[in-house]
Image: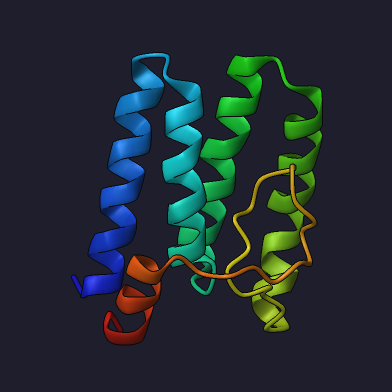
Length: 114
């Protein structure tokens, strides 16, 4: 497993553990980080949105649920056509097409983790 994949899996594992303990806000933070790391890889990208949907369902957050359902559908065409807004955190609280700054620690992984 390369550095990028390992970092993605670490963020997902952190998110899952927090989710299981009902710490949904903290879980979502790690899912956003996982999204940034995984958004150029179809399955990783889709997995981050799937777990964001699960958090939205647990929170009973209609906006997040709708947003994640749309993002789950858009993941495949976005991947096929290379349309990925770099750094986007993936939550329904931000535009799905808005590029965003990448945190320095994640940028270092993206730069060297391939």
